[in-house]
Length: 313
Image 1 (cartoon, rainbow, N blue to C red):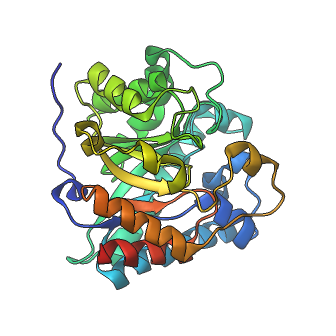
Image 2 (cartoon, rainbow, N blue to C red):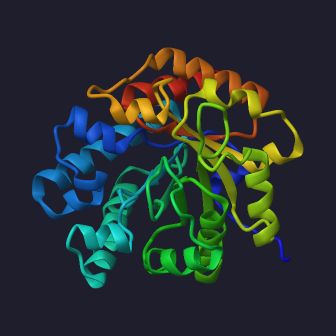
């Protein structure tokens, strides 16, 4: 199959930060109610919109201070058909919400971007089901059809790419990639990992990366890891050729398993300084990893530590 070429600033080198765990930050630190963890839903009210804008400004400010690039990841992880329907959105309203989320980021980029801190706008999409549990996986073609409407909407905006966060299985990742190729959008695939460094399906990360690449002609611009602590996956990153397809990490603050996190009443925000040092060690081993941010439990404190530690590496 054709090998797809992508022209994104982060593929040319240099460190790029992104944000932390947006949903856990908005809920536990900012006091917002997020039904179904749907951050995009709060763009509809003035208070929620102001909190979201402040959130992105705070994280972009860290990149500006540290002289790193920045990925503006839209608050649209839950803004796909099934989740939107649960929240009462029509298809037209959901498309408008996705466009609005990107417009917010485009305005911030126009105001904040500098030559030293290039900013990339990414349309974020999440799994059709739960981000921890693969459930009954779709076929690749079903996933292609399901995710196409959100990706096609992003293609009409100022989004530079799409990023599929918390992918739990290969079929859905293949479908997302094919839908992005159809729309002419670069795509990054980020896999959820368990405490053993495998996908929730039990598949090794290496096999998952290679399977998506084989099925799509190396369609993703790059792959990422998310929703796991570095101690959960550091051991599976063996430095083989396949690891060069990994460019991004968005780790959890906590060492807890997904089951333990689901059952916890309080936020486990771990140790930001320790997390930064763990990122530095990973960058020293795999220096091509240059897109770094956080997932569950992380906030601006973690991103500051991750950024400074990775710049030092």
